[in-house]
Length: 107
Image (tube, rainbow, N blue to C red):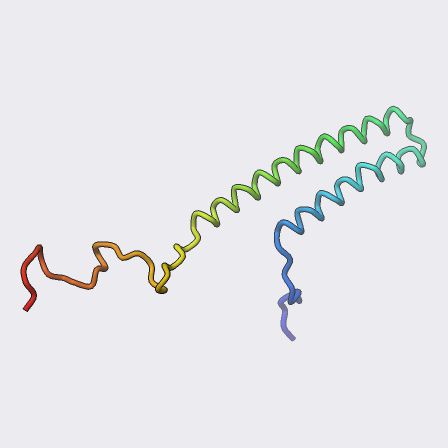
């Protein structure tokens, strides 16, 4: 049997998984203080925990967005040049198709 883990056939983009991460973090900002109060913690302690979790979530979200922007800029910088109207990119001096020197006639 194959030892590799099963992989999903539909890969989700990184932006979707980042949004999911932020949603779960926001959910935990609500859930954790509620659980603390239910199990006997003070309201002040639960409020402090909620504020701390919200601060950490906000900073992580900002860093995640900055990282996504940097990755998008890097992908855009590495993207191949789109071909011109005739399906060929711009020709440089090294790929002009002629290897003669100067203005000498080719005969």
